Image (tube, rainbow, N blue to C red):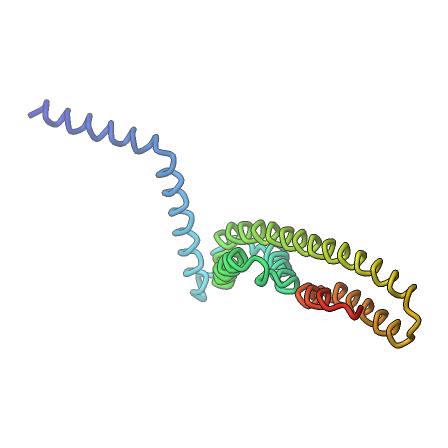
Length: 193
């Protein structure tokens, strides 16, 4: 009987050592504990007489506003047109972080906001680089077209034709400035000469 108890205790001891050495389980249990404590604190902070004794994790206001600004920049740069899948991932992670922040789960929200912030920065850099490459490509094509137009302008005596060519070049420059590259490509295919 004592031998069986000893075997059981020894077996349990080995299992505990094994589980203790599993770092993913340790980190998961730690995160679970932190989330649970945070949820309890938030619940208790909603009770009128108890909330003065509860201190919540400080709100990451700067990180929240910085991330919100990055999301707005992504919208301004029209990231959804160029990198739709990545943009949707960033937006869904942003919504999750925003919900946590508004629910006063500030510690968890801070972790999520850091992730969203880095994702948004990477995507913004990608979009800027892509737009810059489109602009450089359009400028090269414009320069070539401008050289051809200058040659045609030297050989043309008709004022009407010169005016059409100058208007055409002006339109191409404006399309580049407006970053309307699809329309620029269409116009590039139909020169007036």
